[in-house]
Length: 121
View 1 (spheres, rainbow, N blue to C red):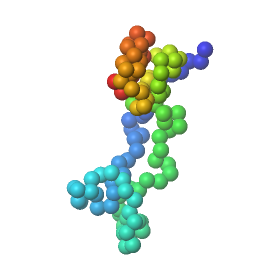
View 2 (view 1 turned 90 degrees about the horizontal axis):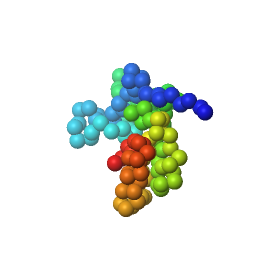
View 3 (view 1 turned 90 degrees about the vertical axis):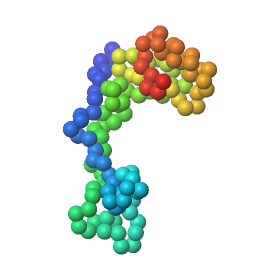
View 4 (view 1 turned 60 degrees about the vertical axis):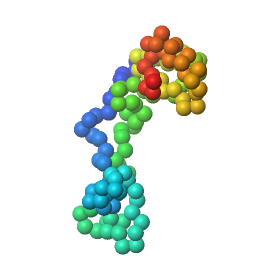
C-alpha cells in the first residue's frame, strides 16, 4: 500500500496578485488580470516600474498543484460508485455540477456514512 502524505501549499510561496493596467488607481477596473493591448501602453511595452505581469515561473509546485487548501486531493464525483473508491484520509470529493438534486442528496448521505469530506456541500 502506498502511503500518501497530505501536502499543503506553502503560505510563503504564494503567487503575486496580478493587477490590470491602471487597476490600482481606477477602482471600477478591479484587481483582476486583463492583458494590456493599447498601442502606447507602458505596461505592454514593459517601460518603467510597472506592476508584475504573469509569466512562466509563477506557477505552483508540481507536487501541490492539484491539492485543495485543506490538504486533500480533489476528486470530482458524479455517482455513488466513484464516491466509494475514494480514500478518506487523503482525498476529498467535489460533486460535479451536472449532478441533479436527488442524486446529490444521496451522494451527501453516503459521504457522511463513509466520512468523506465533500468540498461543495
